[in-house]
Length: 257
Image (cartoon, rainbow, N blue to C red):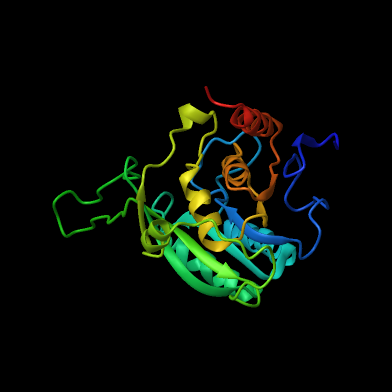
């Protein structure tokens, strides 16, 4: 095990490095990238400044997505979990802007899934209360933008799918409703639930494919990969979050009684 790998097994690796500096992901080796990058809404991460100017945030996004483009196979897919918009520090069309950046990098657009978080509301203000003067409209949803590198038709891998008929019928409907994850449960300020990457893996990858999360956080994507018989790597700059992820993966391997 590399000293920077907090957890490494035959199928799952936690990499404690900067997404811009790591050399541990070979080019064109990844089948599916699933990630929820920092939202730039002043979340108190241990090792990331989540309060950039909006232009700085867009440049940051362009730089890390370029790395992802290089890591993906030609028939690789990219599931990007991002806000629809934001109102903290000024109204911004985050989803539209990041999708445009991804397309300029070279990604092709496939679709957008709307994730309706059943137990989370991000409302912070109403603007002018009960008045047409300056009201705020804030949708308590997030996006999962589905992109791909060169070819949408997937020809590499085992070609073994593990999605059921009912799951396929439900999840190809682009409105997903399930609860978000509470940060106190995980020990990370912005976790997403295992349900999100699990659905993306079963819908967009084959059994045995390699999945990457370049902003691994508490390791949710890797936990989902372990449960779905996918190989996975997660990149995370903060050592404390790497420890949380490694423990979650180890705990998930313990047989339940």
